[in-house]
Length: 358
Image (cartoon, rainbow, N blue to C red):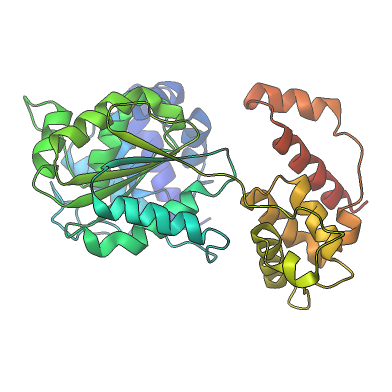
């Protein structure tokens, strides 16, 4: 463990203790999970996001000096945080690790919609694993030139309370609350003259903030928002853009190899499998099995990518064999943590087969 990580973990623990807060209380104030706070104080998370640092500072009620000390401990060498960021000073968009595949039509449609500006609140919806964040990032990269004041990524994943959405947006913009002024007013005044695009990622856990997001868009005539969520925000002026799983082979037994290779879900598997195992290629020997795997995983890009990474230890023909049901204790644990869905169950059973090598 690096000395920088240890310094941040120790400083965070001391600041929390000085504020007479338990980990549970700090988690509630900052909008982070209890597990997240614990991991930060134990040094498990080695590079906390700047947004995470800022919501922690807000939750702890830190003054300028302590806030900068926490930032410096997490990111040695970082320049002092300005009161408000100037246009163009925003952090760059996260860089995807892999190219976007099979979403050409959706990319063109969304990019055209966001760039036009007639609809300024677009919500990309879909089940977990459909690739909403990946597609949204590609859309933002494609339309960035249309937004002269920048594109800002706001990660809402750590949040559990809707009241922390506006502070997280402000932190991503490098802003701070003004005395005697609501944060919504502060953000509205700052953003009203700007031609700027906000990417609000993973809104499903903080849908209670939807009216505030809509109010911000209404108050800022040049602002556009692209949100990703498993459910629509359901506010005035929103355009929902559902993202479906990748298309699947209609019939592998009656399709030529070339036809199967052109199916987006199969093409994604083949591309990611070749990245994991350079000798892999789609052939008459494995095409039917690959198609079966893609169908079993309902065309979900994330599940397909995870399965494709296993080709180096298990050929597709073995992975595609029918398997028994997952153990009952796995299903019960899933039902407590997330809504049970058929595609999650199938993905999990395939992972059990891959991991067990049977």
